Image (cartoon, rainbow, N blue to C red; front, side, top):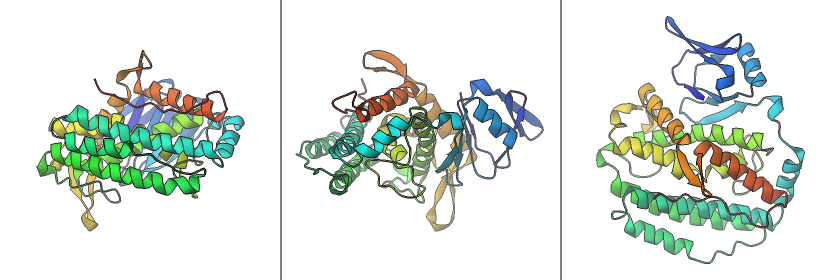
Length: 331
């Protein structure tokens, strides 16, 4: 189970082998063995006893800022990972295999965008999907190094992203004010919900990468920078559309998420209200627990995250000759 705490002023404490939170005059509690991840928002506290319990039970503790963006996570020492995988990450990032991984990640993301548009409304998005198909059909010669490949990959990702946004604008209700992807800050409730959902997904992905032995700060597509979880951001690209975008767009198209769930701040920023965060978090977590057919087996999206991380580590360690990440197709 994943526990998302979205109200200010909450304090997480330990009572024996349970996490407890006092909400007004009432207390809520969860058995630590049942909690996979605690997601804390701004102006919340967690006791050192509760952190120790999280470490004992390998419970992930993730922190989001006031915008709902991913800040960081508490990592128990038992989740420090494997040295072999980390060394392989460093080796692969300096040769053509790093280019192979970065290219595969971008192509998979673009395919997921194309497929989600088709699933949402095949008729209204036909032109944008055809435009994405033409871009993906072009021969992409990225060169032998990541330094040469990144500008080309980001250029293609940006071109496809603009077509994807055009497709979304064609099918989303006009009254929501969605005119394109805006991040820091989001300018409408749809962008606010997407950013909040991506923050939750980042926490899930980084936990999986740590469990599988990766160093989350050493990426392939995203450049290395102090405090930047580059590999986490790389891996998140595979799951933005099938998990977060699908979850948020489901809320919007069912008219369950609207302008009333946004709060306006200075600089035209729009952030989710407490009720909006509750809706978005519940839908994203529900999506993570949805089942799908993955390599002919019915599994949850949570398990797909783990299997895809293992697939990547297998390629890094030379146990697979090729790297081809999963691309989701809606039936």
